[in-house]
Amino acid sequence: MTKKSLEFRHLEAFRAIMRSGTATGAGAMLGVSQPAVSRLLSQAEALVGFPLFERLHGRLVPTVTAQTLYEETERIFTGIEEISALTERLRVQSPRRVVIASLPTLTLSILPGAVMAWRKAGRRETLSIHSRTAGGVLGLVASRQADIGIAVGAVAVPGVRSSPLARTRAWCVMAPGHALAGKAVVQAIDLDGQAFIALSREEGRQAIIDDALRDTGARPVESVECRMTAGAVAMVAAGVGVTIADAFSVSIFLERGLVIRPFEPAVLFEYRLMWPEEVRDTFGRAALAQSIRNEARRVLEQVTAVATP
Image (cartoon, rainbow, N blue to C red; front, top):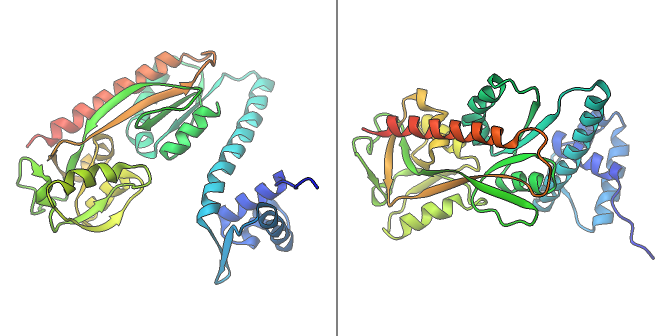
């Protein structure tokens, strides 16, 4: 007997539950009844062979496996939405739509200036920006749902080409008046016993910091782990502790008066531009990439100037 597979209606219900947290809320989003959503969820769990949610105080709490499935589901719906938008643009003969996939921090720090330069150059294309994790950015580019991507680290995926965008050193970031603010350079050992905001372990960023700390024996007191580095800097601004962050994350909060110092031993983060291989360039990819590179360079220079005591 052929095993049945998930259908679109199951994924649609699953996505709505992930977004709303309840079958009732999902039903309202989809315009169907709560029992209908519950029935679709039961069918979906039976088809995949494992639970997708835990029932807790009237809410549906997604399992770790469901979170992984949700990321893939979002890619499918993103593709569908892009197709719908494309057909509408073709109908009214609108300019091409360029899709950029970017880490949230880079969406906030680099893309505003880069997009402004792009628009001032007289480009007619519209831009659609999708903020994702590093894996999500790579997934959108690899599946050709994004024309260009910006992420951290090396790229080794068939069908995806990349080139370096920027390399930024790590800075120690702290609130004004912090005990370490008077140092010209913060050494790893200086973080021993300090309240510390860790970076994403899922994306491997904190592992780089941990390596630098391990060699010195320093043991910061971890208060929070933030998946988004800009979130870690925001925690610093609120007085939660210190963190180690790259220039792009720091740049968003320069007006908050944070103290930024070089961190030793030197830790480097590399960002790369990526795009689908063997896809014809119909929007001026090189010009857009250059706008992004120019803005990245400007941000790096700005942070370096502020960080010099």
